[in-house]
Length: 178
Length: 229
Ligand code: SF4
Image 1 (spheres, rainbow over the protein chains, first blue to last red):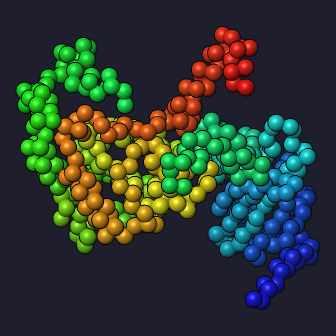
Image 2: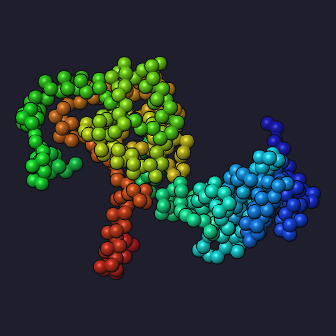
Image 3: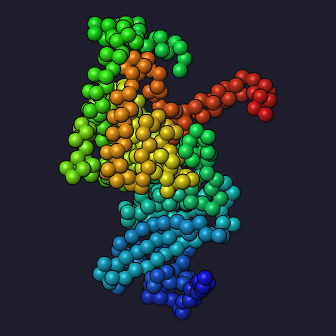
C-alpha cells in the first residue's frame, strides 16, 4: 500500500488582502490567516467586530451585505466564532474569525463575543445554534436560548471537553439490540 | 403487570360512572371471556388485520419511503392499510419512520399513549431499531424500543417499500394469531416503556428518583447519604 502524502501546511498569506486592507485604511487592525478554500480569512478583535461589520456592509466598494453563516469552533486553545460574508454586487466572499483565548475565559463562564443580530436578523438563529452547541455567549443578543437541544441541556455538545450523559435512552442495556 | 390492574380492567371508576356506558355486547364478551374467544377471535382478528390504519408519522428520510409505499406504485392499500390517519386517536399502528431524537421522544410517547388499544408499532429503519448511523450520538434515542414497545423491527437505511409491505404482512400475521381475550386482559404491554419529561427530555423515572433522593436528603441528610454510599 502506498502511503498517502502528508497534507501540506497552508501557505502563509503575503500582506493583507482586499478587505483587510480596506479595514486597515479605516483604522481597524486585522490579522490575516491562511485562506480557507481560496477565500480571504481574517482574524479580528471582538471589540472591533461591530464597527468592522458596519464598514464592510455599508461601503459601496466592498458591500459584503449578506451573512451566509455564523458558526463556532472549539480549537485547541481558542474558541472561534466564525462569520461568512458574501457580496452579491461584487461576487466576493470573506471569512471573519473572532478568537477568544481559553485562558481568558473566566472559570465557569462562557466566552463572550458581541452579537450581530442587530445587523442581520439571520444571525439571530445562527448565534443561538452556536451558543447551544459550542457554548459561545453572544452579548446583546435579544433571546439567547438553546435552539436545537432542550432548554436545560447540560453542557455544549461540540465542545472538546463535553461528556455525554449516559441514561436509559443511550446506555448499553442488555435488553436492547445494541 | 400487577394483578390488581388485570382485575380492575372491566370496572369503570366511580368518578366516571356517569359518563361511561358499557354496552351489553361488551359486557357479554367480557363475561364469557375465554369461552367466547375461540369464536370471536378469528373473526375479529381477520377484520382487524386487514384494516390496520397507520398514523402519519415521519421524522426524517425513512418517511419518504413510507410515502412512496402509500402511492400507487407499491400501493399499501392492497393490504388494507392505506388510510394514513392524521390523528393518533383514529390509528391502530404507528410506523416510526425516522430518527427519534431526545427532543422528539416525549412527543412520540404522547402520540403512542393517545392511540386507542389495541395498538401496534413497526420500528422502521436502522435509526429506530438501534440508533443506526447515529450510534453514540448525544441527541438520538438509541432505539425506539427504549421508549415504546415494538412489535416488528424493520431494518434498512432506509428499508425498501417492499420491506415495509413485508413488515406489514408480518404484523397482520401477528394480529391474526392473537387471542381477543388475552389482549383484553392486557397481557401484553400496552403502554409506553418509559415516560420522558417534556421539559428536560429526561426519563421521568430518573427525575422521580432524583426528587425522592432530594426529599430524603432534606428530611434526614445523614441517613440518605449513607444509603447512597
Ligand atoms: S434509518 Fe436511514 S433512512 Fe431511515 S431515518 Fe435513519 S438515516 Fe434516515
